[in-house]
Image 1: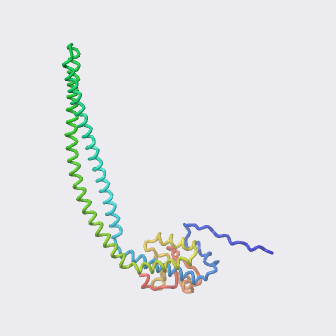
Image 2: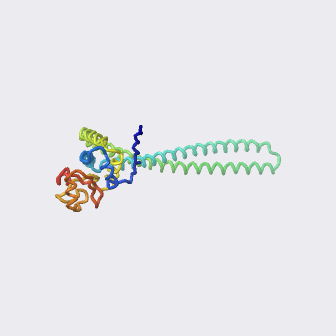
Image 3: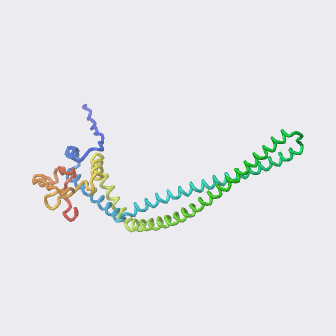
Length: 273
C-alpha cells in the first residue's frame, strides 16, 4: 500500500512579499476569492484601528516625553540628595577629626609638665602645632562643605518645584489620553476581535507578508481597492486594462507593479480616500 506523502511546509521568509506568494494563493485549498475578501476585511479592520489611534493625536508621545523628562529630573534629585548625604557624612568625619585633635593636644600639653629637657619640649610643641594645623584644615573643610550643602539644597528646591509641575502636567495628559481611550474602548475591542477573526483564517506566510508591507508604507495599506476606476488605491499609479479585468474577476492575486500592494475588487473610491 502506497504511503501518502506528507506536505513539506515552506519556512516563512519575513522578507517575502505578495509577489512571491502568488503561487501559494493558486495552490491553496481555500478559494482565491475567499482569501482576497478575508485580506480586504483584515485591512479594513486595521484601517479602523489606525483611525482610532489617530484620534489620540500626539497625546501618547506627549505622555511618553513628559515621563522621560520626569524620570531624568527625579534621577537628578536622587543624585543631589546622595551628594548632600556624602557632604554631611564628611562633615561628621571632620568634626570627629577636630575632637581627636583637641584630645591629642590636651594629652600633649599634659606631657609638657613632665618634660625635663628642651629637645623633647620642642618635639611636643611641634606636634601640638601640627594638631592645630590639622584642626584648622578640618574647620575649613566643614565650612566649605556647609556652603556646598546650602547650594545643593537650593538646587534641590528648584528640582522639587520642577517635579511638581511635570507631575501635574503628566497627570493632566494621562487623564486626557485615558478619556480618549475610554471613549473608543468598546469600538476598539470589537475591531480587535474582528481583526483576530480575519487573521485566524490567513496562513502564516501571507500574514507575514501583509504585516511587512503594512509596516513599510506610509498609509499602512497592504490591500487596496481600485481608485478612480483605473488606478491603484495605494500609490495611485494607473493599472493596465488587462490587470483591471483580472482584479474585477476576483480569480487572481493581482499585485501593483509599482508599490507591491494587493489590489482587490472591493471597496470604493470614497473608502480609499
